[in-house]
Amino acid sequence: MKAPLLAVAAFSGTGKTTLLKKLIPTLRDKGIRCGLIKHTHHDMEIDKPGKDSYELRKAGADQVLVASRQRWALMTETPSQSEPDLAYLASRMNRDALDLILIEGFKDEPIAKIMLHRDAAGKSFPKMLDKYVIALASDKACELNVPCLPLDDVEGIAEFIEEWLKTQES
Image 1 (cartoon, rainbow, N blue to C red):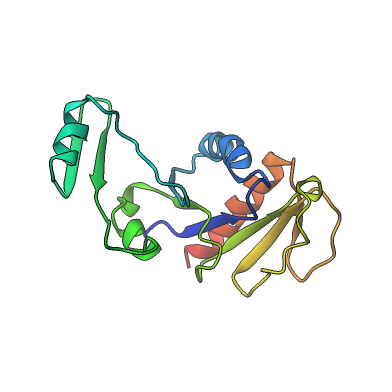
Image 2 (tube, rainbow, N blue to C red):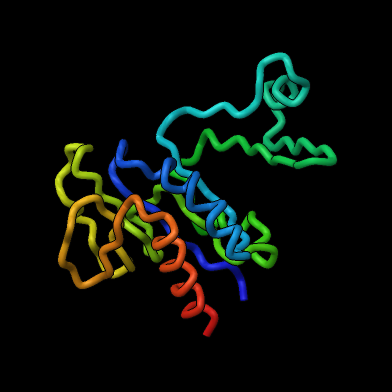
């Protein structure tokens, strides 16, 4: 089975990255191998000026793969594309070596997602509860047609994901 996709989606400032930084090691402790795709609206630069890979990419290479014994990374220039295509990005990952690919953002994609809501963020209660939402993690009690998980209960969210993963194997 190829690793399923599961998005953690919410308004900016809700705590997606904060939750994922705690959730990934908790899932790993349960033996779940996680990949991650993060969407950003910002112009991102993962390479540093002055480094050979940066200079070669800026010289016009459309793709630059940098490799060492510890890791490798592929940078692809996409100036003529609009938003990144999640299916394409996921296809670049070795889904056979993973049990789950977590997605940060991409809240409009037709994939399973856990929506987050933090009352203190000042955003309205999520209206994005479409048929792909499998749970809501919130710091506010809620009654919905999907499980409502305490936002600060990382272990509980990890257990929910672990049980959800079992249903994806069939």
